[in-house]
Image 1 (cartoon, rainbow, N blue to C red):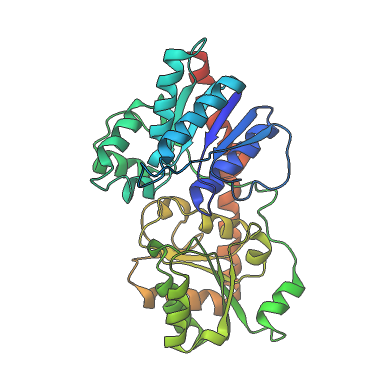
Image 2 (spheres, rainbow, N blue to C red; image 1 turned 90 degrees about the vertical axis):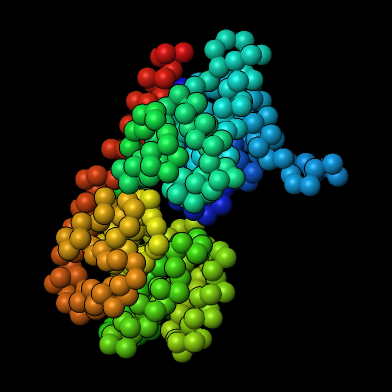
Length: 380
């Protein structure tokens, strides 16, 4: 089957999941065409069955803003004609679902044979933040309604889409996933020593994100500040984004700059997670929580906010701990319990890893997408 995947190339859950899905589909014998402004984050080395098509958006004095939606739709039409796409899979509604709709209309009118079917996967802020903005909400809702099949990464996001956009069509839930052969704890003693020194009592607390305001980087540092007062610790910050300066400012205010390791965005996070003792995710909203899933797969207990889809990933008190977003003292208390009780830490880490391997591995989830594609292709 020929599948076009439209996604953002930047660091973020939607782009990572879209990329991993494409790689998994190619391994299963499909021909996958990525369509984006840049090579997708984590695409890695060449793999048979994968192709990348870059969207270039020219600027003209007539236009005050680049016309990305039009250039994206035009590129989808071009790839669909040249590669005989069966499916256009739009990841993140804004503006990918709209571009997919436009391209399908063009292909249905001018193409030879049936137009590709459109699948839209909703990832989170495309609905709860951007898509809910009055400037976009009606066209986002229309584009979702016009898709041939719609999926969401959690039950929470599906409910939000119905409530906030008034969408009436059926939305299937297909969770995010990991390649569990890759996402497993590894042995990296030198990296551990580089980050924590030679003192075995020092713990490594980690946060991975795209450093947007919704991730509440200031809360990460304030919870860590409570932790380090009791347990000797270092904070490992992985990622980059608009809140990067906030991290440094708050660290200076708290007097913990010397306890931070800021390593920027990294394609390979497994080694960093493998030397971590705890993962913090005090987000204001998470429609799924892919970063938490990656930590769990590497046997790192997660302390996170009880928001959005995180309760569908983490069982409170069993495979991690969930607290209200503003309950920083409670988050710190759970963290300290894990860092000072070796038996409880091991039990939570083991349960977290088991939960990922039972529910969220590529072998379980990717066939759900394949079933959607085959059903739609059969109805062309």
